Image 1 (cartoon, rainbow, N blue to C red):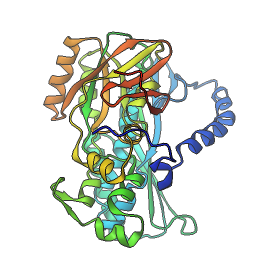
Image 2: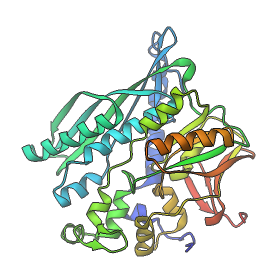
Image 3: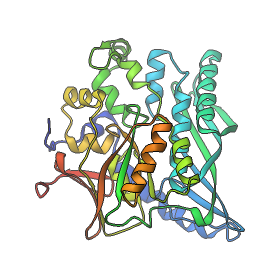
Length: 370
């Protein structure tokens, strides 16, 4: 069922995540940070800021991709359940899935754990998940930091930073995307590691005691408890994407669908294009529960969550789609053609079935869509 945009403050803002405020905060940072790009002439950046990762030019045609991300408030679900052994997979996934977007092969990662506790069992579980994620991604965990900051953090915060290798002539930021290209969506495993603040508020309740009870509640529509659903690890897309690149498959762009949803397609560098998402795969039940229980608008759902598609590759045509599909099948990653690229003035994403228009990182309802 399609729900209209709600006029009041967004559910995400009410749950504690101020997306508009984050944009202003980023602007304040960037006016000071962007000039630093000229401080190191020996190792300049090979891409503009704003894509999923950046690349440092090492010379001789070689580059290092670099990025950082964390698991957000998904760590709170781990705390509610007392199960921390998969959250490290999410940390690795959020980092390596960004690194591959620029065409780089992930190499190594470091972790940062800010904490108010040093419980041995919890840290052993965190290590187990990080090791599993590293194995899935084919990377090393080369170091890390444990910071006891009880005055700032109650519990644990888990963040990573990852590097990857890419030849400078293979750096991909979506400059070659053009009208007529097809968009292939690779399936997500669930909510992944974005929007958990909103998902927890709606599915588990407002206060800690309520969440502690509801996290173990079995939900028939999911076939498992709410906590088990929310802790499902983020899918790591490294192996299928690396096989596509190694095979010489021409990927016009690779896009990690995280916060911003399909609006992340707007981050490609090509311009005067419209991404038309007109073949959505079935929406996984967890998102239907979140939307129905929380009365969340379509615009906000597709802006906050991946809605079942965790990664997109953009290719020339049907021949390349067949190759992508074959590789994804080999790696047991479901995929579908979810749309195509059309010409337009500027850059935007449309989801006709939901009557949505996305510019920048924000969706709105558009009566002009059929």
